[in-house]
Amino acid sequence: MIRALRATDDGIATVLGLALAASLMAAGLVLAAVVSLAVGHQRASVAADLAALAGAARGCDIAERVARAHGAVSFTCRVEGPDAVVTVVLPAPAMLDRLAAWSGREAPVLAVSARAGRQS
Image (cartoon, rainbow, N blue to C red; front, top):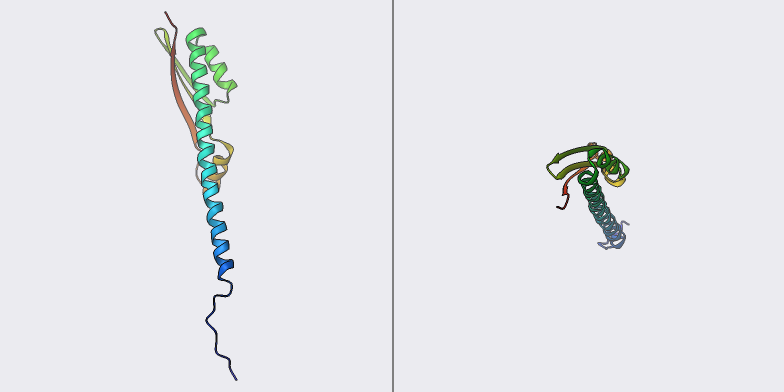
């Protein structure tokens, strides 16, 4: 005799639990990437500010040394009167670099400009 199949919900909690866990992990990964980007941008901003201050006080040679000490991979500096305008480019944080490599894209860079001048 063939038994009739029962329509039950056996195992649905496991499937829903796994779906919830996967969703939470994805949300955590996105949040970590956003935080990593914000921290990287802050580092680039600090490097640009300090390099601009050094450039205004002592010239572009010192400004470049300051920017390189903060991890800049590219640097531009120009002096406009008493002001120094500096642009630094820092590589993206390691997490974003790995995500870019995983997705087949180029690693992002963080570029920030700053201006500083001498007080009269």
